[in-house]
Amino acid sequence: MHPAETVNYYNCQKGKGRFIPVDDGYIFDLGKRKLKVISIPGHTPGSIALLDESNRVLISGDTVQNGNIYMFGLMREFHAYIESLRKLSSMKSSFDMIWPSHGTFPVKPEIIDVLIESAEKHLRNELECEEIEIRGQKILRENAIAAHFLCSI
Image (tube, rainbow, N blue to C red):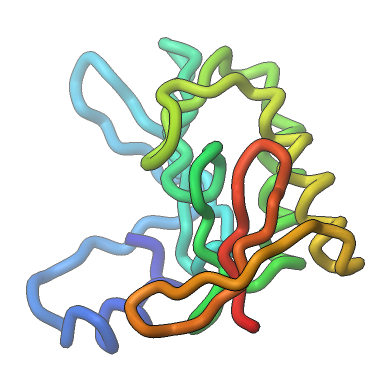
């Protein structure tokens, strides 16, 4: 995992298990498949994507998807999220499809630019939203066009 995620690891997992730190550019060599780590903080500080260049696939985790993107709670940050999306957008020529953790599978790279636009609208308080409850906590569910941002009230 990315070293920036250790705070969540120790707070949520109580430090159980062992992890190997990976950073931007680290390559997982799986033999016939290599996955390049792309650091994309925002959803969490240690969020990463994995780029399979030979198959032209981006594995985006929770950051790029058309489902609910959790942006409430500890260490979620929209400015970092937008910069990470811009980073991925600049790499769109390297992949033809995105495999997200949630929502529809796969999604097209064009969703990245829609999420950038929506996140910028979030910062300007321009997104339609509704109050919902998750695990006893009231949050805002913002319509982010291609997805929904779940944010603190």
